[in-house]
Image (cartoon, rainbow, N blue to C red):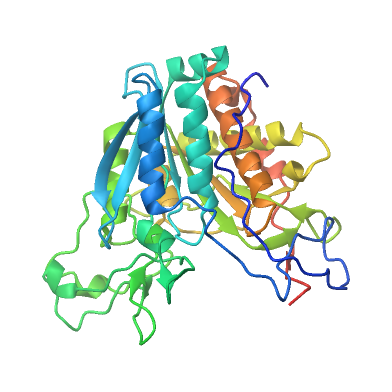
Length: 394
């Protein structure tokens, strides 16, 4: 591929304390890497919230006007939420919105975003020029600044939720109104917070109001309530771009490919996360384009041959209209989910390369029109998620 990645200056290689390999029956091939019993997991190699703003501004300054960086909101905890823009919406150009780290404990989407921005903003390759001539790309590298910076006793641990309490009075609701089901209640050792990626709705204008008490706490198969500033910031960006494609980057556990294939799964992808709601049915065209998108990226990664990049399966079936993916799909955007294996070890650099290789292939496929030539039914040739496996060393 002509679009050669720049040196992974920001690639994550989390530092580890050496420990002998434990003896265990292999669960996958390769069987790991895994955390060792005596191993210290350190997150200080990750880009901090302060460092994220700094590096984005540095890329912007070097881009010769190609990249613009905006602050489009604040997290519940007061951190700025960044949007990096490569172009503006324009007739005849496809819009792509990419989001990372909406779950604070799933950090590699942010690292991938920074590397992708470096390539797109600074490269003079013909392929990059073709991509930017045909596509407007907006990236929100880190949606959950609070969770990314969450510390305990001065040690960075990160967590899934933001940092925000349930305040029903803010919405004109009775004080006794239960919190949304995706709210983590505070206790003596932690503040409360929301799973931001359950706080979305295809009704982008929905806001809780007096008389809505009966809607709470809601359910996982129903839309969310837009109570977090992070979800509202994402929606505001979505409404500006109205993207043809929306990509969300996450992490997951560990699996083998199937009951019969014990190759380690490094990535799960998905183009289906909801069948829709009565008010917002799933558009068949948006559904088909989502399947094409995922199948195309799958094929491009499979072409790399016998490598960890080919350990790809389909994410399990879900019905989650309250996620960003679900809501935006119901509004007509094609969607793709990246669920990288969580390793927290030296393999993180490889996982970032896998993700950025897939994103790069997607952008080339959109620019050339190759994705539109894929049979949507090919998506179902991707193996469904295989058996979960655990750390044999613990």
